Length: 479
Picture 1 (cartoon, helix red, strand yellow):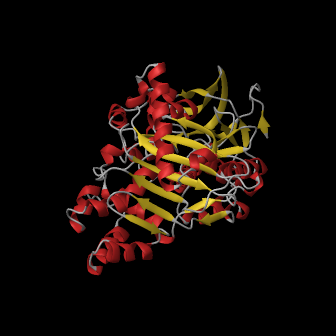
Picture 2 (cartoon, rainbow, N blue to C red):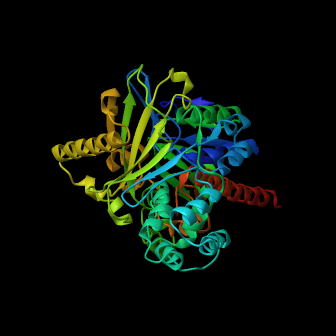
Picture 3 (cartoon, rainbow, N blue to C red):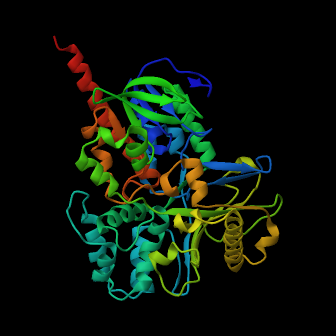
């Protein structure tokens, strides 16, 4: 059932999930299908977390917020843990383009096409290309390799910043990785994306989350929106529920789909964890944030097909540090054609995305903030006009989101669009070993970021929660 935001929930649950990102929702759905009683609490007025959308001009414009693209594995995950109806709406993008001073490439983002481009466009020997992809394929999460992304590219393509740009730039936009991050994380994520291209959900994020909500309710998950959890309750060194607006709701286990640092430092409190664990948690770096510009095409106007996803840059060279700068010349355009949302009657939309640093926005005055947003919007319009001359005249709505927008609506610390850096994964996965009954399924480590990574991490943690509940049941049955 769905509670109203004013209801005081008195029912006791086996599992309470804090936050309805894709990890939290997938975990809740799986556990409910497995027969567990589940309550899903969401501070916002709709489900989805960063997988969200908004409407403008009485719904004639709908914009997806997070970069809309994921690996083919999302089909299998949705079919197994959600529904065939959801899985069947996942379709492959036709064209991913790069436009920058170093090269221009149009690809379907499959491994076969990448091999051809590296050999014929970038003049790399087939032997080197095959060796590179073989190393990626053999990378294992449990390997203790200290190689960085920068070292990986230098090993196979020394001095080739153009190839580094070609291979790394999409992943920078997908999960905030950089040249100093572990190569293992890049290898796993890039191999997933490359296997069979990039996919989207036809109908848009709003339709997908709507179908997921129906599935949750059908499977018995109780939901309350506008229910911001203020505290996770700990009694006798074990988690036993949460507090919402001063009201306590009890459960045997709690799963936080919130930011890792927020969960430990604010919702629980460091005093409930060992000194060593707190030290590890404090060393976890938050990942980067992002900016977006949303552009709606007037009713009755159209644009030609120029690609689905376009990585553009005016910068002569590639730098993951420069990509985060307000002065960056790079941005990614996601183009939404009428077949994306056929129910909108031949409407087009374009979203520009760029990575950003929270600190570059946090300390601006109100006037400075608004001025910087105008710069962000103008940069997007100018960049788009270079690809689609005259398109500005066809746009009747434009707005921008910044790291402060991300922080406000998702409650992520510092507007961290991609959760934490790689070291956060270890802290997250061991949380229940520190404090029985407490589990974490938020975005941690650049392996677990993105829509597919989030959903799959929810499944992984669902197994851990179920094992914990089973142990409690066995303890209760002892004479």
